[in-house]
Amino acid sequence: MRPEPTDLIQSVSRALRVLEQVTQADRPLPVKVIARRCDINLATAYHLVRTLCYEGYLVRQPGGSYSAGAKVAERFHELVTSFQRPPDAVAVLRHLAAASGHSAYLGRIAGDRMVITDVVEGPSSPWLEDLQVGLETAAHATAVGKALLTTMSAADRRRMFAQQGMRPYTSRTASDLAALNGELHGLVPGDLVIEHGEFRENVACAGIATEVGEPGGWWAIGVTTRGLDLPEQLLAMLRQAAADLSGVTRKALAQPTALLEGDRWGNQYER
Image (cartoon, rainbow, N blue to C red; front, side, top):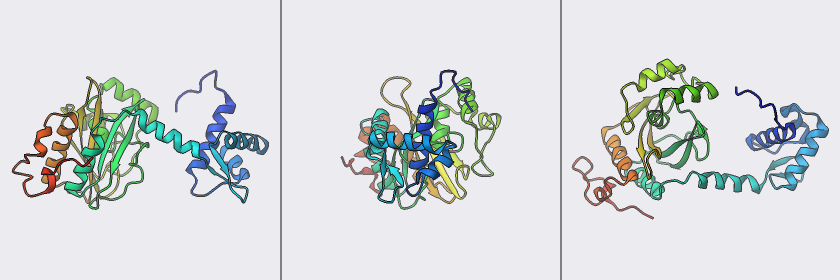
């Protein structure tokens, strides 16, 4: 837990808590429920809810409950745009998912957090609610995250996990920094990173970090599978996608390797 700043503005903090509770709920919330969940008095809750409605972040439903407003979606769109994804990122992910049948992910480190910036779902992968666009997710438990961790110094990793902790998602998750550093020992940016059941039971993930654009512009591309098996052909497709993302081997799309011959990897990107 980060220390509370001495100049914290309580009203702003409370308004953000209200917004978090409403947007995370699976149904509109009455003000009494919002007040209870945010641990604020009812009068304050009413003031905050009315202000958020006026600004467009909440909407009052006919029954008097409140749900997220259009401004939340606008801010989400701006968040995704701010990541400044590589120009061909979506095309590369779509191609990887179409050729392999597996879900393809793109992530990066932003403000000491690992964030998923793009996802293209594939039928051979499970839907993972925590690996969706705009969500902060577990760098220590996912192959995409671990691939990005190979680009960071030991000191940066230590600072990152001191702030956010290392939640054990399954019994296989590395939940202390020494164990995680042991897993990453000897790996360098660009190496294939694999995890088996560390983020979700009976789900495997592979990821590769790739430098795009200016030096230090690290992204990671990954795939997931049902079960703990990662076929070699899928890993070869992932390696090719990582290379294409960084612009190293664009012409390989028109000249598929022998390993991938016969599948759809030789097709051109669809824009």
